[in-house]
Length: 325
Image 1 (tube, one colour):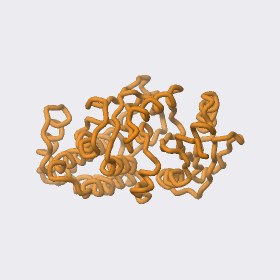
Image 2 (cartoon, one colour):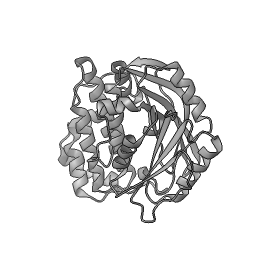
Image 3 (cartoon, one colour):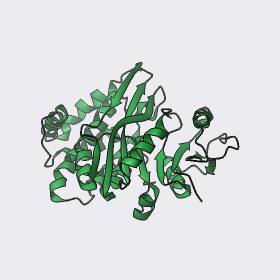
């Protein structure tokens, strides 16, 4: 009889050190093979990833398909009641299993559990905390979706638990056509399909920012892939009452993309042109609120009605100035 309760899916590409550290951490917890299994998906590393023969540690090698393909193969291979994700250069706190056990007892009917997370910025030597603005508890999927769209639920793909049968039953997988924002789309689809969502203000996941992080690289034309995810989310059917929340969410995603573009160097005229061509993301009916984020979105919504011929030189200049880490 399968006793595994938690399957942790870890995609990896050329990071043997990170994988070894994660395996050693879970070996020290004494939970492998009984409560937890690690599914390490080697996404075509140049030097294949190796792990010791340890019960509860499963290494799956595949041709390089990207992180989405790796996570999808992990979902299909998982045996646990719940699925979690972890990136190979990040880590969980040592009390993660106790936290999961407590949360799943509190909300046995919830298909999705979302926890707070911690950001460790090793470039600027500081720690940031992502905390839900809504109260902890169990919410209907429809209400949780509003909170998520309204930026009251903060989540990272590695700070959630999903019931495996829920993902398989609803056919929820990562979109392998997307190289960016695929995790956001996955979150939206999970919340949108869940009957019940557990919101928890405890945290166990630590996201590391360092030189060479995916979120800390020079912008190339690859960033345009964000728009494909934005379009899919924009076209997800929701109730009339939720549409303004969804519009606000997509608008803030566009602004986040824009700010990141300006914080990094970008010499691509195509990126600038395509970015301005998508300013219509801002020109929609938004859910209003008394927050700095809302008023910032409103200001950029007004600016978006300026002709692109005026905005392009401004954006081009802003993108030439890059913060030096």
